[in-house]
Length: 111
Image (tube, rainbow, N blue to C red):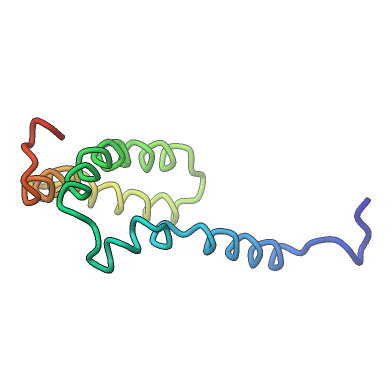
């Protein structure tokens, strides 16, 4: 049972949560470390471009669902701005990812 002395404050919880997230940060993964160091082969990058596209393609739907469920107007505005950046114009993120894959020599249809 928690007592006054053992209760976790919101601030302490957020600090611990940030520490956990930092340990699991995507860019700390070995794959991204190797990419940053220039140690990935072209074939590895081509496969990555093909596999990761689904994340890029569907990410706007995650943002949209979060926006729709959010009660805070300021946060909704921030999410809407992000959603517009993800999907608007000729340089939307899925299109940019397809161009990235093409730059690696992967045919658009293969992504």
